Length: 179
Image 1 (cartoon, rainbow, N blue to C red):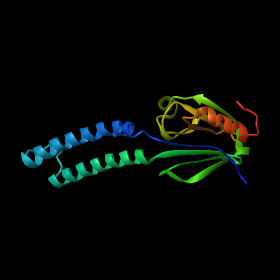
Image 2: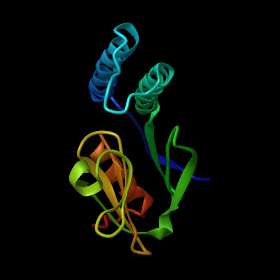
Image 3: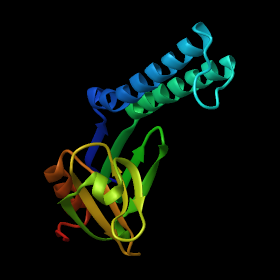
Image 4: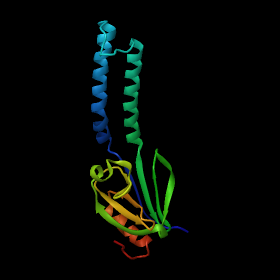
């Protein structure tokens, strides 16, 4: 029977996700609003290669729906990490809905470390950097659990509870701290 030592669920702050998406929504709304007003209301062609009126309205709707969809994707994204006696279990719904498992015996070393999401991984979310940094699953913050697997792959999980996660890793790995 597997024992659970630690579980953490992180979700992006509502205000932060709104601040990321809102400027794009406002800019797109203003630009397309001006274009639609000039082309449909004033009957002036808008741009060097103007679209049809229908094409302009449809494009505006698609762009605004895409930006709105990005907001809801960011709001619904969560990182769930569990340390159990048999390894680390994680998922990142809605992108990774099914729980993934990293068996304990595949972990060569681990440490809690500070990281720079943009510089090291190109931002937050599920990110892959092939050589130096490996793969990262992050939502917020700058502290994470860095794993180095026996096959040489690196995986980082962002955490807001580094001390509790380190204690759980020590328990899972048999009491010894590997750094």
